[in-house]
Image (cartoon, rainbow, N blue to C red; front, side, top):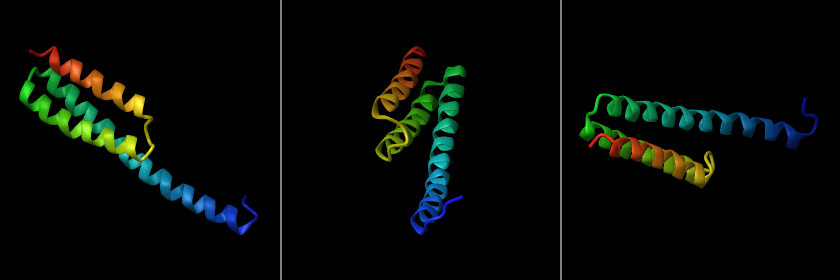
Length: 87
């Protein structure tokens, strides 16, 4: 239990930031699954559209320090490679 006022405030801030971060991580995960499903169906156009949304969400998460920039690059690279294999 926090004893000081600043510790209590920090707990409140952590709850808010955790909720925001979890929301964005969940969105990224869902978009990744959409890309994977489109690749599995061998639908290149749908996969490319899904990838554009996915890359945008990953970049946003990276900008907000939810993902490290290298992790964001790796996630986008893996998705792009899977789309390139469809051709």
